[in-house]
Every structure is written in C-alpha cells, then in structure tokens.
Image (tube, rainbow, N blue to C red):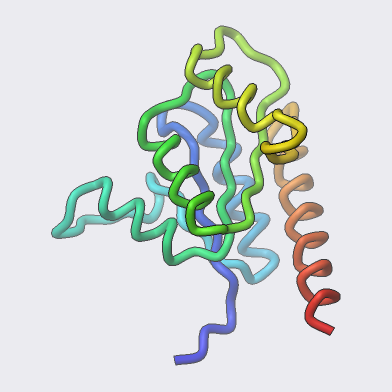
Length: 149
C-alpha cells in the first residue's frame, strides 16, 4: 500500500510539556505529517507499553524529542531506537530549567558533542516550538528532495 504521508514520533516525558506536544501535533497536522505522541495516540493494545512505543518509533520516519527538566528510561530508549535505525532526529529543549534531572543534563551534554552529537534547538514557549518544528522539518524535506535530484 502506498503511504502518502510522512510520520513523526514525538518523544517527551508524560509529566511535562503537554501544551508543547499539542503545538507540535498541530504543526505537523497542518503540514500533512502524521504524528504519534504517546498520551494522545497509544490507545489500548495487547502488547507491553515498551513494545508499543518502540514499534511506533520504528514505523515513523522522523523522531522529535522535546525536553524541559525530566528524562526517563522510555524517552532515552525511544531516542536510542531512532538513532540505531538512522532516523532523522530533531531535539528541542525548553531554554529555561527549574531543576533539570542529572540524566537529562547528561543526555544534553552527550548530544552537544560537536563531533558525535546532533544539533538541537531551544525554545521558550509552545508557539515558538511549533514554528521551530515547522521550519526545521521544512528545511529537512527540502534537503531530502534536493539530494534526490
């Protein structure tokens, strides 16, 4: 079956950044990009939670991570799965921290490595995040298209 939409997996801890995940989903919907965010889309399944979210990462074309203060084993596992599969990874970090987890700070330090890491973007609010995601995905799509010519 021909799939005519790109899909994105939105990764974040469930306890924070709800409005930001809503903004990302709306932005992606407006670009005709399907998205999966655990709290909105998981539903009831006859499989473990871990198997369900890893399956969704595997079935998506894009990984989007959005972080503030918390980092959990599932969010790291999602990121690692996307990285292992060679998915395009877009990470957004809210640019202020009340009290960042040590594990999140270690993750930020790891991805900040100029030789081995990725480039992440910071944001102040859900509106800015939506705009950043739209800009970055657009740029990535254009680069993909140009490289296919």
